[in-house]
Length: 376
Image (cartoon, rainbow, N blue to C red; front, side, top):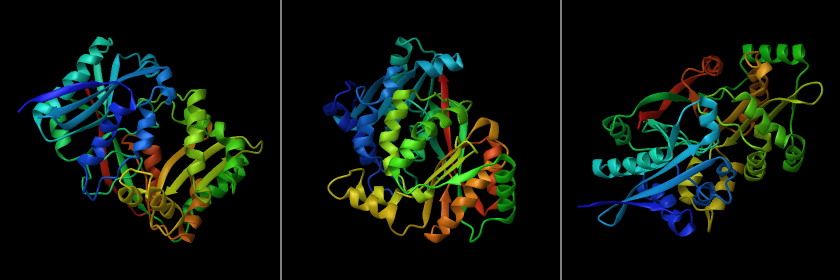
């Protein structure tokens, strides 16, 4: 039984089997949430992903006796390396069958490519930027995933340890019960913050108005708020335009909270969306012929789970209670539409200031994921 590794060119004919492999490997899993094939194809296309302005990558597929058995993408992000002063290659889009020979061959190929690029360390799973999926699941294998996170089988971490990879950082996730009312202390903090800093919540009923008024400001705020987070690479202007076009037209606006100051300058934003997990399972990662129907039904119909996709607060307002203002706006909306649970998505395990906000709610920490590192 032989293992073959193929280095793929960034063309649709070679990348499509690479992209579809993950969805095929997890077919039938009740916990795996498929990614959208068309989105992944765009991410891997140097002509469509602005991150390739400062990144380079190489995709590899493993075959066992001629059948697809694994995949991995090796990435070098020059901006991130300049900021961290590390010669680091990232690995992402990593999936494999439970076969040591396949796993070793995949990672050997990625590591060899990274060494030829002058790198001395591998880290991952990570993407081109912080907007991509990151972190290998190490706890919570029997919890349904979200569209913003990675699911993997329990045998993955064992292979990473066997190959000599070690923990770099962990992220944790919470499932939070939506309270019937705004917690009293939360409301009190929100009122104080609103008055003290002259802040107000702005709501939109038009995606175009949101885009025109705060589209670029929103992603510049993300650059500001996330600047010191693990592995963060600031979004370029081209990337900002790319994500505005890709995401802002997709949002359910009443689940978006925008906080501005007296000058209408953006101070904070909370972006949430009805969970698409079950809809993506039904669509099997395809928008057509009927995937769009399941997704629209999940966004606009009855749904008991809301995904907290993103919360960003301007640096000078962090640790000042502005998050309370966001949730004071959103909790009544969640109750109005029958959302019973919120998924926090990933938070660095050491980010205590973010995790402290859950003390006012009933919650459980239900998933943990890891970035692994190894000297090469």
